[in-house]
Amino acid sequence: MNDVILCDFDGTIVKIDTAEYVLEELAEGDWKTLDQRLDSGEISLEDCMGRQFGMVTASRKRIIDTLDSVVETRPGFSDLIEHCRSKRIPFIIASAGLDFYIRHFLARNGLKNEIDIVAPRVRVTRNGVKFEFPKLRYPSSVSFKDDLVRQHRSAGRTVVYIGDGTTDFNAARISDHPFAVAGSKLAGLLNENRIPHDEFTDFRTVVDTLKNLE
Ligand SMILES: [Mg+2]
Image (cartoon, rainbow, N blue to C red; front, side):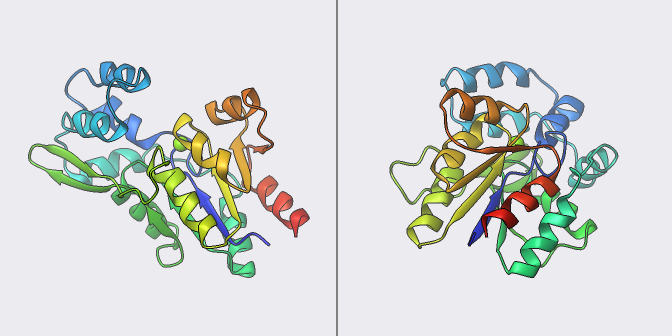
């Protein structure tokens, strides 16, 4: 029934926001003001992240080690992946975060070859971390996340979208079946806008709901 699952990473698959944690721990400068300018619509997400990570000069290894010491996977993630495997449902991570950390996380969990990632390409340079965001295919898209939902829907697929943040809202809103982390900003926005969705804290709840839809 469900042809593809698109899932956010930070705050959804793992409990913390890894990009924010790296900024908290390793940025040298006032990155928080840029978040306010992003929220007020003054600068784009791409611009914001590029400038914020320009303040991080730590090596890739130092970033990975810093995150490995604190990253915790949300319960039931392996059950969801097992469900996708048994039903042959593609599982794709859509993240505006650090793609190299997501790849490292998947490798550490033995999932490197079965999960696709759509994320900005991140390069760690002497002048900080640079982001290259995926190009949008639809003029109506706000970000690459809702663009991705449009791409799969226009190919005739049923799209399940799972996330937690404000940047997931447009993608979740136009998906066939949105799931939001309970108590998250995304859950709040979906409730405010009366968009039918399911909320969860453990991915096993998502698996049970998907099984009931079959
Ligand atoms: Mg998130």
